[in-house]
Amino acid sequence: AQSVAQPEDQVNVAEGNPLTVKCTYSVSGNPYLFWYVQYPNRGLQFLLKYITGDNLVKGSYGFEAEFNKSQTSFHLKKPSALVSDSALYFCAVRVFNNAGNMLTFGGGTRLMVKP
Amino acid sequence: DGGITQSPKYLFRKEGQNVTLSCEQNLNHDAMYWYRQDPGQGLRLIYYSQIVNDFQKGDIAEGYSVSREKKESFPLTVTSAQKNPTAFYLCASSITSGSIYNEQFFGPGTRLTVL
Image (cartoon, rainbow over all chains, first blue to last red; front, top):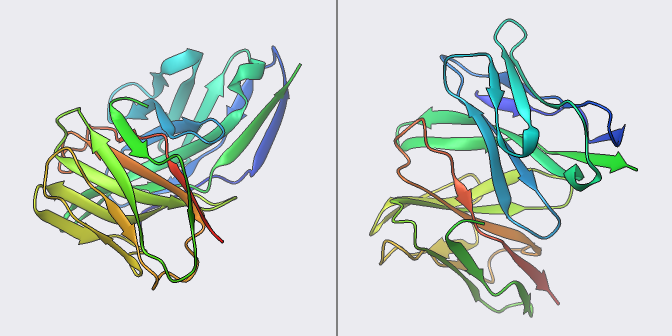
């Protein structure tokens, strides 16, 4: 079965420090991976995606993610966290079935950035 | 939240009532999706539609129904058969469901509470 896992329910970081939100995946074939962010009572906003090419993917709001095939990981990173980055982050993988292809989401990681 | 609107933002339902959640998109996307989000959990797929007049069940379709009579509209009905409908409901769309490259765009969500 194709899936993603976000091993941390919450990540705490001080403003100005680097942040990492972890994601590991399990897929058969090539992985197509996505990160989304959700602010309270809002929909999900797309941050970045990995389809192929460079292992370091740059996205919105200064975020980037590193694809590591050997470790089956796609961790989200930012060099310097802002208080406004506090939100719920979801990793997702595209899965394939006879009807097309869908996204399967991880359980989410809440990022808390403290001043 | 892109060009996807959901209404209402908050909805209260009495037990035994059916309610319909609206989702409209002006992005000219072929594919549309409905997800359910519960506290501390990721998104679970309820129904999806790849094209007008066609839709398929997702992982948790029981107690829900949809229609896709127009490209821009994908309403979700929560029926009385859904035993635990209190949740945050998210609608999404993508250019097609068949392309691996296309991310999904999300609406702002509807929070449904059963009284």
